[in-house]
Length: 396
Image 1 (cartoon, rainbow, N blue to C red):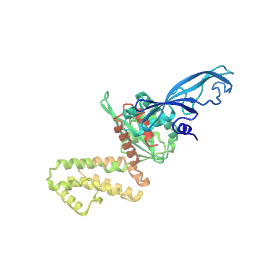
Image 2: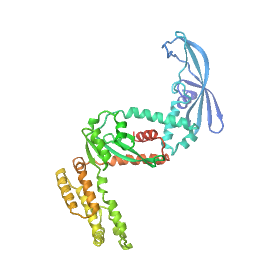
Image 3: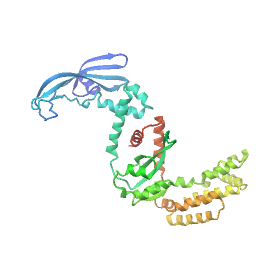
Image 4: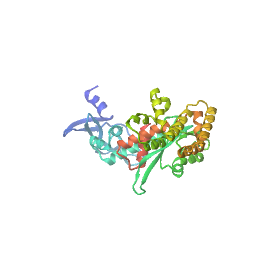
């Protein structure tokens, strides 16, 4: 194989032949090429009989090589069909009709959008406009979703929300609801808002609602109402992490009310940790510190009882332990303990369903973290449809 043909196959597109190479400036290369004539067929009547109407020059951008810009100036034929008398352009493999860039350039641009820190650097590296980058990026992301996310609801999903931004007009935080497919380990859908009306309007096009058997969620009343109405066969599982942290802010509030010295600082630092994870000397110091503050000690004891509940094995044992815990809470005179008891009784079935399945919402929280990283790297998003495409494609 000749050197010219090797360079053509490696560097340029098939079915074109290099005539001339020019160096323009420091980093631009212009390749003058001709299209190798082959049998073509009329796109209107599929006839293979034609004559050459005229020759045309087109200039397209190709994928950069080692930071050098590649421009192709190609001469191709404009043909006229003998059957229908209509003219058509000779197609070139790798270049779509009416495009001034190759598909290879577009794929390279998409790679840069994923790996560069921001789109400003992509614009400088590829020397194209912001409009072109956005159009190429989000059109391709939308096509990827149509091919890879067109399936019915799975049996196990998770639902959670995270902040999207702040609405200037409404003067409140905008939230996004994320639904995660636990079986395929990917986000299922993103919805702007967290009310039942927003979720109904954005999710009713997905088939197979009756397939959902388990839904992991935090202790959120709007989500609970929506799941009962939208998924007829689903049972809910309250997330373990959100249940265990119900008393944490009460402990922190009471700890801040106590003016301690530096000697008790280490003991106060251990209040949010599980007693099981403490060393013997740490647990001894903590309980000695709590002896002087009986109300804080009572709140801490109920927090440890919640941790002990989640170490129970078996659904029936957990039901008995849960009942004993709420009965002991009923005897307490502390306001935060009574509030906690009402919450636990309200969510009793959802909390105890954890002992049937051992499902948590950790995967959904992980994808929420991925979404926040994308938002931080992009310095925020103004358009929710663009944000949705970026998040859903980040895990495909």
